[in-house]
Image 1 (spheres, rainbow, N blue to C red):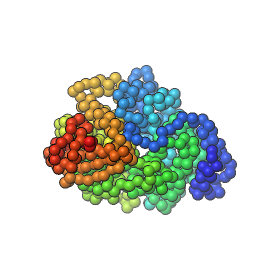
Image 2 (tube, one colour):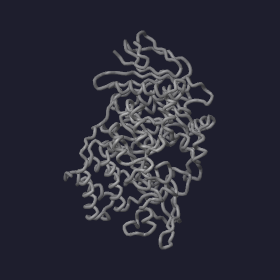
Image 3 (cartoon, rainbow, N blue to C red):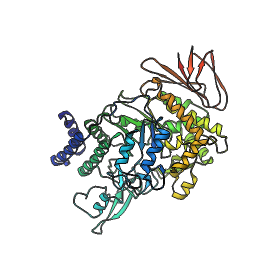
Image 4 (cartoon, rainbow, N blue to C red):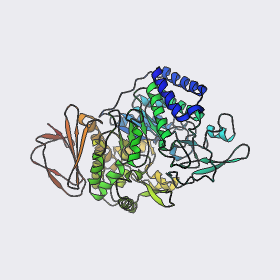
Length: 565
């Protein structure tokens, strides 16, 4: 490793750890980094372009009798999805005990029912891969935790023990569950350990140099296995100081800077993406100065703002927010999405919409069958935290017809694909999935409503059925993605200008460096909208028709992508 990079890594470690990080610790860390540098030979793409579209999925999304899940997924991906998606975000595929993978038992292994590292390598032949780095917590059933409970040497401070009398009222809570969980150690003593998300997800103690070294080892392993994008899960909670909010602390940002410096030394071109489901101003802080933290942050405000615009048939709040977006450097961009394995987060709306409008949206969606998760506030009250629903069902009423349902859905995804940044589409969206109430009942948690797993042959049959909702959604969305990937104006870095025509029509103009221009128009209403056209001549890409005349007509929920001649 270059001396300059080594000095940078040492500087960050000194800031975080001071003298507690010894020369011996540093030597061990450097050795691991140097080993990874010597092993990784494949070159990563530098930056991003209009062809980059990410599929979000579980590795065990599809099953077939007598087969591991990963080869089944790869086969499905190659048949149905490879022409639309350049990248695949595999949600945690490691051995796990709860939370659909996010309670990791062993960071270094593939869940046996899912497959092997060789199966990951096979998928890598077809797609660039995005791995989850579940860095904040791990399973109470892991070997590391077992070693801690046994009080084995080297593990005594792997997790965070707190006196239960400590005042932790200021701590930001994402879940309405106890923050501390009692565990009994080998000698019979009881320790109350920090569990931000559940009693089965025990927070790692990054204040320990041993933990940092162990987790950097995990990061290096993922880079060695070919991860091109690294998602830092729940990263905002990584450092704890009682008496503070224990979210977004300075040390957390410094650790991300450390991960960034290490990935640049080991696998240049790797993209770090931070997942912080929080108000927008806090979320964008994870870009750092534009060069030293995440290259991408999740655009968490986009899904609920699009939903709000659809339900109110009013684009003004969405447009105002979008117009305010700025990036700190050309080395950063947005990771845009509408749906994911989690619910639609509401915290990212706070500070953008009045609380009354947020609560009104929640009530409307609840009335249409959506479920809601709540969080506890420091003052003893609770607030809605996320809406649990498929995005297809979130946009429409239960009794509306499929044509109406599809039109709203395609409009929302056309917004996603028109936005500056890299778009990501959840597997349930491109499969046209409806709410899975049976899954919620069987599994006992709200998020199961949008996490249905499928038998490979059965889902193929539905996609091949010309009368099915799934087929229509699949082909319409596939067509949109294909159009986006062909246009330089949709490059993530291309200039973007947002405006409105009245309260119902959103306009996004994208201009490529080469001067190519696409004007996207969206009718967020159930009435025909007519507007003046200032486009002398062009071609509407979705319908494949030339545009002439001084007026444009948009049918209810219609999208136009007009490329100027």
